[in-house]
Length: 334
Image (cartoon, rainbow, N blue to C red):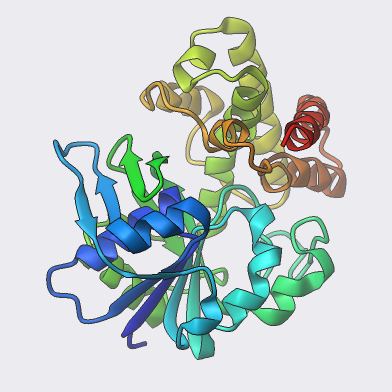
């Protein structure tokens, strides 16, 4: 695989972080473009994209081609999506317009992704598609799961002003092929991102990493939206932490029923969460911003997979009902 052109599709908090670091690479031997929208796009076009890293006194600024119409860009060698799961279907045609025969797509997604069961040998459900994750099979058809490199991100980031991104810590990104292969493409992509100053790991067990992160996302994200609490507030409240623990146990039980292996206990995962600090979860950021909430990949599909595997998920079902209604009311208010 040769990478000469990279497009970050969805240059919000995480996507914008990657776009800025790629564009700032001193020995750039590829061009970087971004797909964004609204005030954020206008700011990037006018003033560039600024990124303040957690350990930096001042932000750095980069200039790059930015557009809200991907069809104005040439076909790309690599596409990196920074969209949330519920935003992907509406972007499918735009993403597809950027693809060449051998283009690969790094998809940074929280929760269970639409391609999850592609080439999955551990669950007895290989190639199963979920309508909730990919309505009408649009992503499967227009993009194709065979192009995907899975990505699990542990990077707190927030768009603090249009065109300005703040990192809460120096995080990491875990990449893996759905097949589990340690492919040449995976190595090349990891090398390009590492060269841009990103902390990249590669794995042959990307599904395990997906489930490990979902333990936190399925619990903290909806609870933070329902309570408007920062991570530190949730961690300091015993009744909320009891609920978090119960959801994490449900995630673990469903994941294990599908063949996933977890490298830490619920207690260890909770202890790890205490080091995150007083940040807003991505779902709370979206709630405050009046945006649609990322419910299905984090909670809805967990409940659906619980039914598929006959694993009870009573707390997650309650959270799903509450946060779904919260999203309706929030959207109605806008």
